[in-house]
Amino acid sequence: MHPDSASTAAHTRSASVLQGLQSFADEVCGTFARLFAYVGTLALIAMLGVAAWNRIDTGVEAPAGRAGWTLADAAVPAFSLRLTDQPDRTATYTVLTHAAGGRKDVLRWGEPADRPAAEIEVYRIGPEREGMRNPIGDLAARLGRHAPELEAAGIIDSRFGPVSLLRQAGAPDGPGACLGFLKTIAVPALRISGWSCQGVAMQTRRAAVGCMLNRLTLLSSPSRDPALAELFAQAEPRRADCDAPGLAKTLNDWITALDNPRLRGTF
Image (spheres, rainbow, N blue to C red):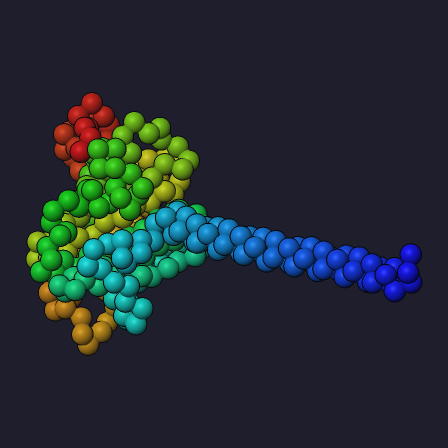
């Protein structure tokens, strides 16, 4: 074979090999780029899923999930509440405002990754008047339940008058059970609701609810509603001592007494 021909053939083979290696390297780089993009997308979806799950578990609803309501980060807290039996729980204060004028002050106790151990919501009902439509359904949704799953669990007396208690229908009493409460006041248009999952027995949770209502304090503010201030002033003489045992009293009414479960039905 002519030396020039052999050299040309060798050069051609080398060029082909180099071209093949370059194509292979380009393919590997493209594969890794697509793989990184795929993994990044999965990671983003996972982060969004975890964030949404944590928000659901903690009972914090996104403002967009409650039609007409927005989170008021700059709002000044209107109430305070001290729970001495929750020293190791994180307390959060959230204010939601409605475009029509309503306002919800929500206090929660619990770790961010867990369902709140206790919650109280003071809803100053505005022209939207949605608070008068289905208060039990609203409480059930915040508890992660459907309204038919709640049943009456008696009544306790409080500084604001009789307060209805609710619990999950058919749920056994014991650790982890929760007791909801609901009180609607006509003047001023106000609804106080929430729950307590404290203690291992119903009576303990009844006392905890009573203490929450008795310790709820209206903070001084130049812009506070005079009618709301009057309500708390009238309720002040009826404030009970939460440090005394057996605070939460059942009204002497055989229809609503806790010891008459056959008379309790689901809503």
